[in-house]
Image 1 (tube, helix red, strand yellow):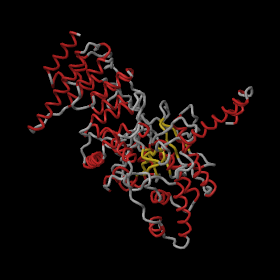
Image 2 (spheres, helix red, strand yellow):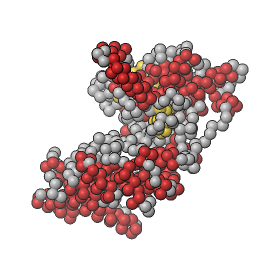
Image 3 (cartoon, one colour):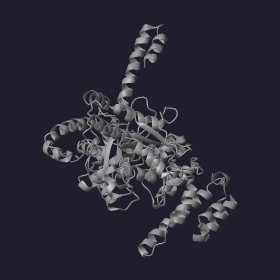
Image 4 (cartoon, helix red, strand yellow):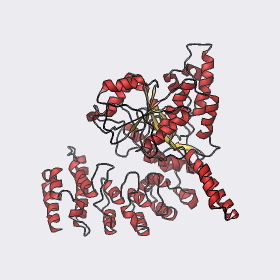
Length: 593
């Protein structure tokens, strides 16, 4: 900063008036940068103020350096365990994560270990891994390596499992970033008795006015691990390359736990975890009105509250001088007011924010009871919303993420014409919602031809836009549905949507045509007459969709199948076996093309 100001003074010395104006602008921008990163100074979650206060009030008297495990491609020597000082340009993710931990435990630094989590050879020698873990005095391990902790049966011998098993066997406490794809849970636990030694952390982001923190639309929710789930702010500290994510929420929990144990040596690591859970706040969350659904969404605790955790720990240590067997739970019950339940949203703005979260935080494909209840809560909120009042709001009332909240209304409301008029008037074609979706992406997800036509004509380049976290084009969204709208797909193709663009969200290296054919083949045969009729409609829809691609004037065989022919691909997925007549039809179309 000193160098920056020095250069500015030199640059603007010629015109003092201009210099003063520009320096004022610089200070304004710098202040905004702090606000964007950490929230305004008035918020109860301003961690810059809190952390400075903790540093002064609760100095570390016993060094506790947590381990930060980070994923890094290209590391080949898997038997070496050499902690490293990461730089921003060498591993920006590791730098972002470790610097947050460092802020909480300074003057100490975390131990950073970068390993290739994708390599099957990583952590293969468990004796070496156990020896390394045993040599680290810290009980806490931060895992923000952007790898899901949900493990299928075939992954039981993966590097992730080997590390988790060894770490828990060495009595470590693992703090996992829960994930950034709004999945239901991260729930792998090798041994039930070790469950309490794994913590999952979801991400909070500031609301648009920075008055409160709310669960991020991208964050994983608690799901089935509610007892071990906590939320924390998922934003950067100043000058970090990664701006948001659960990867930045987990190190806040790791940092607070580490400093608690370092500042209060009489606390065990498990007691520190209990204190963090007990003092978590529920003020950042809206309730569905159903306690079971709330627990499924948020878990049992709420959001990390560093100041309250330290104040409580200090009081607890003092109280335990007189009662040596006192536990954090007993002291909390005796000394603290009962934790408030999650609160219902009250204003229209709060309801829209909550509907956006519910829309993005549950799976439409899952049919378990919990997901059904989330959907019911969302639909109930939609029914209680007055569409007339909503459509009468001024343009400045709305924010881009309202496009998520409007999804259920567009699919269920009887007054879609009013909503379509509102959306066209309010949301400019170039804006983007939380995941980077444009209004055209949302319009296709709504299945609204009127909106698709409006936004395609307003900004034609959107038809092949994939500048979003999922790297999906509008055309791909159009073919996701089990009953795709052929008119929308045809309209996109007529306006130069490229069917050869591959995507990696669901299956790697597939374009929309390949996706449609694989979906067709994967439909399982059913026995009941009712389901047979339903499935017949799905099969017919996918066949019509595939033919639409092959018959379109813009279809280019070589571009869509550059590495293998359509015939080879179709045979590889056994389309010729399951639907031989349809296979002959599309191969015939291909030859004519």
